Image 1: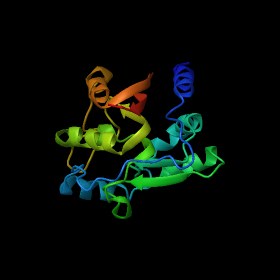
Image 2: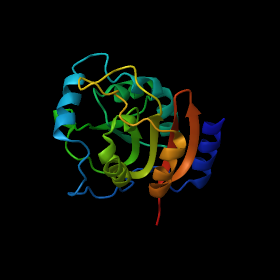
Image 3: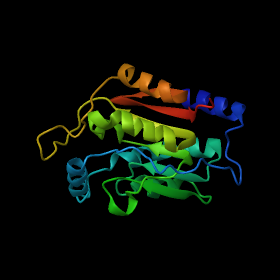
Length: 206
């Protein structure tokens, strides 16, 4: 029901629905650091496990629905891992859809991304090093030129990292996360999941 309300709000607003030739903001040469070298190496090793980073695939139908609603023709998968979300989206969206990937732990996708009209950050934020979370959220604000969809798991993961920590480095309730999003974005939709929440956001205009 909430996604239906979100869609009506998006369609009624209209001016952010992507049109051919919609401009995006220029890329920044001063993107903040989003990961430490030690954690980057750990994540690179974890991604060699074919079972690691599968959760984003389950969000593909919902992400595809929002993409169709706003008329996006390109997507930045922020924290792309193995790129499985992009592959799954192509199964749900038949028209041409350009997928941009960013993941600091994947060498070929580790360059700071340019802003994009639609950004998906799925199964990522709870894995961020706590001391770098504000920088990562600032970078999400930088790259979200129009609309974004973000998911957050608020509890522990099943996986334990090689250093003994839970793979979800941040385990905080929605009430802890939401002010951080409100500070940076207009919130279009919020919905709870059994172990977390997802939001659809729009770039602030002022």
